Length: 267
Image (cartoon, rainbow, N blue to C red; front, side, top):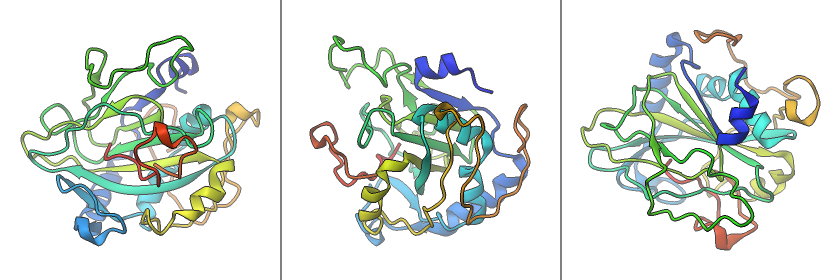
């Protein structure tokens, strides 16, 4: 189990080797099969990224339901939640760099969690994610974060099969893919149940095809266990990690978020 104290301090968890090795080839194939040009999405995507429509794939859905991922998401959200969006993203050579930013919560701080599952090894050479640990919940009198200040940012590196899970208010960004080495990922979002009605209003413009009716319980809400109330997707159970049995919506505070329909940023 991830240390809850560290999770609450940092606002993220990097789950090393969370995806079973035997799944990776199938996941990469699903990504490649779902790639669509920018102009074929309801809202055009960035030209320096490869985007994949893959949310109906059963193995992709299984990744989103790995017990360790649900545990971290539930701990951060603190109440019953649902999977709202899944999309494949990969920075192209010479692309992928972003300014530090937040994707922001929807209706209350902490109601939205983002996860990035890596299907290829990642590091500085192929545009790995940058994060600012602890930046997700500023103190009341803390100055506004300067998104041009990289002094506290940390660029991640790791192996195919890792999954980053973080609060949507955590400052983060994608980075420049200088070599063109493949860095396929899925970016997926969990949201608190009260966000569901607003979520339904933007399904089509966000390109969401999957069933989003499934609900997950949060240990932080006092249930004592994580379980699914409704499971439309069958998943396998396997893992190579110890301890495992194995963005978004219209925002309330539009001035905080430059993306009013809630499609999460590239990273």
